Amino acid sequence: MAQITINLLQGAVSFSFPAEAARKLQEEITALMARLKAVANRSPGSRPQPQPPMEYRFAGEVFLEVFCNPNIYPSPFAAKVLLTVRDDRIRLTSEAELTRLIEDLGSFLA
Image (cartoon, rainbow, N blue to C red; front, top):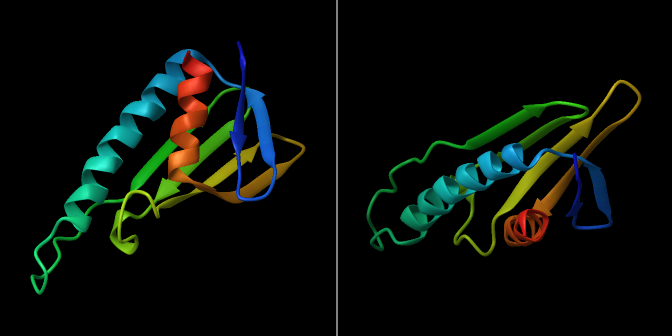
């Protein structure tokens, strides 16, 4: 299993992550981007259609959770995700920019 590095707002975190799980996360992010675009492209003055949040979970050597509410960001480029990485000894919860997470996943899968 390869090591993925995810850049956070301050610092970075690295952990073992299978490529299949990374592809699944990439699929979830693609669906999230569509929801973020739907929020951003609504007509001015129209009532926004609430979009469901993205909640991705992976349990392996470490537990990874990625959460994003698309209803609170004006565009996909402003969106951030809440990231939790934990195992039996440590728990890290931080924010990461969605665009940076997309880049990190792309680099990992390349």
